Length: 127
Image (cartoon, rainbow, N blue to C red; front, side, top):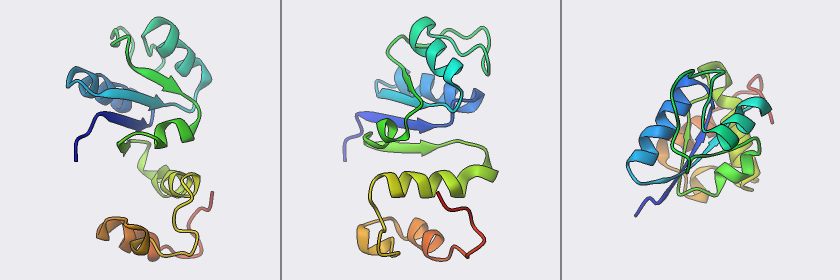
């Protein structure tokens, strides 16, 4: 599978640095950030002074506050804080209409993801 586009969920320092590295590797990059001011600054000034001050970003990196924009990428990397991972994973899956029947594996998800998804208990966050 050829990977032309990379979506990154998490517009903090790690996500922004990863976006820069993926862009340098020649990938089309879209970065999701929760903070509207970070999205605006990345798109307008090619900076993320909120989380990665002083580091100019490749002008081709696009930022968004809409999860669906990121989900259209060939690969989606989730680098949001670990405490939020389950919620963002569920949001991503549900945004794409996946797993409506509760079974990740039947929808072609990797075994490790399917095992994680299907083992979620009732106390896990729902999005």
